[in-house]
Image (tube, rainbow, N blue to C red; front, side):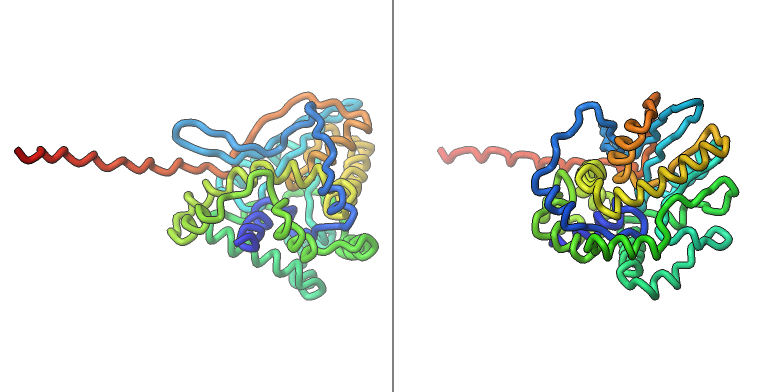
Amino acid sequence: MKPTILALLAACAMPAFAQEAAPAAEKAADKPAAKDPNATKFIRVDRDDKNVRLQTGITTYVKDGVTVDLIGAIHIADAKYYTQLNKEFTNYESLLFEMVGGDKMKEGKADDAKQDAKDPMMAMLGNVYGMVGKFLQLQGQKEGIDYTPKNFVHADLSLAEFEKLQAEKGESLLGFAMQNAQNGKAGANQPDPAKLLTAMLSGNANLMKLELVDTLGGAGDQMGGMMGESVIIGDRNIACLKVLDTQAKAGKKKIGIFYGAAHFPDMEKRMLKDGYKKTGHRWLTAWDIPKAAEVKKAPAPEAVPEAA
């Protein structure tokens, strides 16, 4: 059952077209550092009487007159979530975005065929996104986000840089998947396998999302916090912040960074160390799930009068 759960988590919460897991990160995960009580939460689950919502944050930082928003992403979500993000992106002079190999963007689309031919694991993860999105009746990020606006700026590793750093650190998606399948580290609150299987067999997308939402609500912060030295988080964040510095020096005063929410615990630490001050935070709803109707209890049987 766990490989299925891992596939669902990978499609929903992992950074786009990314590979995971360095031995150093796995060792760090065995003895996680104490969580900073002042650290920002970039993904959460919000509940009321009628709905359960998986939400990602937009967090604002300021330094030397430059305002930077960290805009968290879930890579499979409600279509209206991506519609809202597309509107948000128009507010920025520069919108820095993640995509390994996105430096090869042509007319707003990455050269995916070339990437997939070189790296079958990336192709596999892309297929997982599509499969799980259809299963949960959600839209994929690459289908929902318009990457054509002129303010979009690639702020990630090239495919060659990514592969070189992974080879140096011994990272692989397969290694990460196997490690998490064994140790159950994919999220803070693992779904109940029996309940998730029942939901999957029912074919009810909302029931499946209700079983997964709490796992995803804690997975991003947990993974981001323990993988700051990995290529998938740390090195890509370093690359992104170099582009941020370049844009700021070029005179851009309002900049957005659109990355998977799991990147932001590490990215925030780096930005605060560099002198940025946090000034605001708000939430966008990625999944809006109606609660399952309560099963009405059958009326108690009427008492049978005793024989005289």
